[in-house]
Image (tube, rainbow over all chains, first blue to last red; front, top):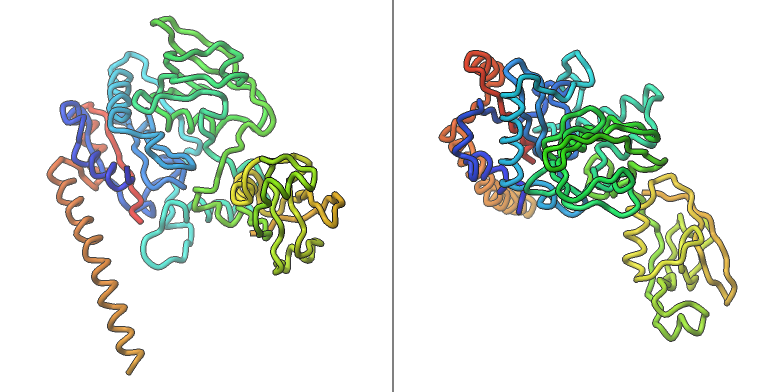
Length: 343
Length: 63
């Protein structure tokens, strides 16, 4: 479903009209005038729904998407589930909130974004990153903001945002015994009513270390510590408008080799291998590539599939500025050609 | 003269594109009013304090 269709359905209160009057309803369409230290979210998204207490504290965030689309992460049934969960929290004697990271207010209209027309949400993120870079505070981990709970092995049910649909094998979640059907109560001390809450919680988690997870199974509360290994935040960023300048293009292009050709060259028939075309891009030529070179892998890891799949793999797995070692066959000899990736 | 004709064609085509977009935005604005959404967050927060109800805020960055 198109995000605009979903937005229209939410505005028309489809599937939750009966509980809508238990909320005061606000619709905002200009990020420039929103206090982003208060209503903080993943600015690569074009829609986010917040649930606030009467004194402005945040109960929950609803929204999200992945490299495919938003349908995997949001639904009207899921929104209703979150609304019911928020109402229960609102009525409880000790409601819990997702604390704001900064106490002061800040509005994108004060960021000095020079742009004709509307300031888009991703423009705010781009400006934030530029400011961090100017202050020398930007680091590579910031590329993978708002990691999905999938990265710790938790696959949440799109129609019941804080209920575990499945647990990935050999993941941090599997190692502490989380199971299908468990209801996540909090992650890293952030209450979880939705996928958006889980992402917000993980955004605050360390690049390496441990975080608490609390859940309920058959009404019984449970708690454990998730161990996060180095690189756990890494996710496909190719859909993120704010990160397009960090996504590399390999600058190599050619025709896939046939199974017979691969066999003659001592390669497996399903291995990725393509022959560089006669025209070699200047950057690739500078790295040492020549017409007719056969590229069959990167960093010593042979890959199956086609050249197109390989080029997408590079886009998903590396960043501009990364140095890679490409595995090449030239005149029957195996070579390794280093290349720094460019946009 | 040719650039003037080209300009008029571009203007007409952009008008054809913009008209549905603007109609869609207008319909959403109408729907929002009909279904009780306000665009005034400070007033909504005052109303929440008065009634004790929680607030739902939908933020849509419309491209």
